[in-house]
Image 1 (cartoon, one colour):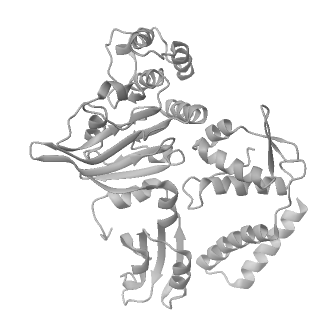
Image 2: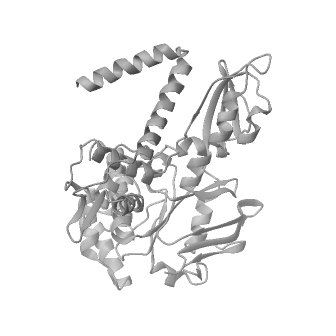
Image 3: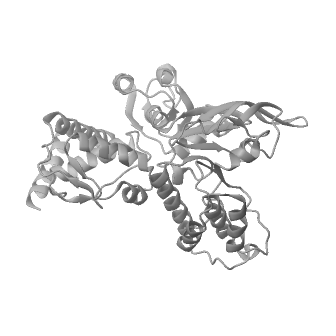
Length: 304
Length: 128
């Protein structure tokens, strides 16, 4: 299988505003790539380019090796999309939409679409305009999988879903991965929900790709280190003792120091704990959400 | 395998948590030889994790003789799963001891008091 998705030196400008700055990333077959970023970080512009809806100012986006701006139709046959804003004619029911798609896609599986709608609990005969935000997203997902795509692009798929609908979506995605090994590229703010599903993570901030890394390696190197400091007179200032760990955020608390570090190492931590003046040191692993906040939040080294 | 707990936020890779978890369930007798384990698909859905991660853990467990795959039927605990090696047991014990020692020192507890607490917990565990 050829490489499903590649972004090569993508820059997107709207007048003087820059949405993406020289972004490059690649998604390997069978992987699940989660692109994270705050609102306005450039995720939507990147996705619009990928889907051939927006022309790059410079650089390219490729689906299965083909430029997604110049050869959109061919790539879309192998790609399923759940857009951020569910969009379909309001009078059409889910069944109408499935019928419509069947005429476009030679491999359309109407029975599979119907059984997904049933699992989601969406009435197939309700007009699209009469569905809730979450149900619209579920219809979009059922349709996106209707032609058994090799690549699934999900733009913030859990937005507006209640916990039950979210659970149904995870189940569907995990089932799809188990059955067909579909490659997935998604943007999301639901970091906890995709923490165990995503295999690679990208973080966009102000249009730049801050980080592009395997989930396992990211988890291995980030930690929260807490300790009380007797090294300085105030007990709460920090000095060079944290340097080896490459702190990305250090906060001074009443009881001591609370640091998020990006280069954790067991041996270095054993030495750190042994420093006379470093008390009660602990290191704990971080949920993806906290790693994201530490990297994509505003300040570096600020105090709270 | 309802007692298989996974922490997706842990720094230990999820496949390794599953591998350790299954080995422990087998070692403790909670999973008996010949017992069926959930399919990759079902366990992945249960734990809300990537099926490839479960498949990797199962593959390692199969290679290690803990699980066997019966084609077309499913995955089972081996009839004679290898006992947990001394090195593995030592590693798991050391990790847990480290967590306990950290907690005790954070609480400012003296070593004797921590050892007493461990002894009491041991007694309770042995009686239950």
